[in-house]
Amino acid sequence: MGIRLGAIADDFTGATDLANNLVRAGMRVVQLIDVPEDGGYGLVGDADAVVIALKSRTVPVAEAIDASLRALAWLRGAGAEQVYFKYCSTFDSTPAGNIGPVAEALMDALGTDFTVATPAFPDNGRTVFKGHLFVEDVLLSESGMRDHPLTPMTDSNLVEVLGAQTTRPVGLVDHTVVASGADAVRSRIAELRSQGVAFAIVDAVSNDDLVRLGEAVRDLPLVTAGSGLAIGLPANWGLQPSSSAAELPTPFGHRAIVSGSVSTATNRQVRAFLDTGRPAFSVDPLRIAAGEDVAGSALAFAEAHLTDGPVLIYSTEAPEAVRGVQRRIGAAEAGELVERTLAEVARGLVARGVRQLVVAGGETSGAVVQALGITGLRIGPQIDPGVPWCAATLPDGSPVHLALKSGNFGGPGFFSAAFTLLEPA
Ligand SMILES: Nc1ncnc2c1ncn2[C@@H]1O[C@H](COP(=O)(O)OP(=O)(O)OP(=O)(O)O)[C@@H](O)[C@H]1O
Ligand SMILES: O=C(O)[C@@H](O)C(=O)CO
Image (cartoon, helix red, strand yellow):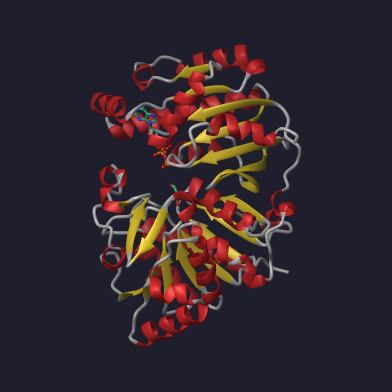
């Protein structure tokens, strides 16, 4: 039997976020890092859903389309009955894309003329009302996303934002319809379709809205969304929440955290961890740029402290300090140097017996997972909304537990809470 749902996520931590919501709603899920070469269908096992993690959010449009179509072909080969294109709950994109152009390419490949779009994820404060996206209590355009270096979001009206990225008409299924139930949503979709509308932004302010929407989109070959819509889909295959969907092997080994995220939530989490007095090593990008062996120093520090871990290795700094570094050595250069160093640190930690590793930051997670040679993740229990523990196998065959945290996810005590969750009850 093939998989039920095949998903394509435009970044690493976003893929884990989606997989987490599917698991919580009852699906067994495998997350793959990029499209497997040479088939690789053996990785699927007994999974109900496969999420392929791409790094396509901010690459040139043609590259994003190409990677997404390769992922689609693989998922269809695995038997996917429905396809889910996952983007960020803050709709991270520019007028050039990549959400609109990728969605259009997937629609064409699937031979469908219509899909829905909603980044709503109420558990993390993302809601859509009258087509406008809110982050907690403020409009997207008034949130921190307005200053994002790559995808500044200065318009909260998603009908307009998506409209600028696609040649096809964009409509709205508004909240009065969603609140009336799945049949009302289906009727509205039929009406929009008859008017030649190709995309419908769908309002959702609660999990109940997403469950109703999930039921309504049962027969669409393609859905596009943040991770929120995932809570409404497994029931379409008769699957119900069950703790066995999130079972992972027993964890062992040393514990560490690698944080290259510079987001507000991670800054708070690093401060809270430092306040506990546990061992922590700060990675300074300027020392890396000066040619010092910062990874070596970090690993020497970690080695001395792993037995009283978790140990934190972090480059996380407040925006002011990050801007200062970027002015000195350039944003792209700083990012690359830090990612390379933290990836080397992660490899060294694993070589020193770390088998429970938390990584903070989407780009950082991508660099770490690639450096560790991991090709797939089995999704386990949720630490905080959007962030589960995962189990993976290293190239030498040994197991490792990983938690890949999006920059803005998780409560202040996330780092300590993550390890507590793995302890026997
Ligand atoms: N102190 C620093 N100075 C400059 N750049 C840094 C510093 N620390 C980390 N970086 C870079 O900033 C980028 C952070 O991106 P990353 O995606 O890992 O985290 P994030 O943006 O906070 O989280 P997310 O993308 O999950 O929302 C990386 O390229 C990282 O290498
Ligand atoms: O949807 C979200 O907010 C996250 O899964 C994400 O994509 C962060 O990069």
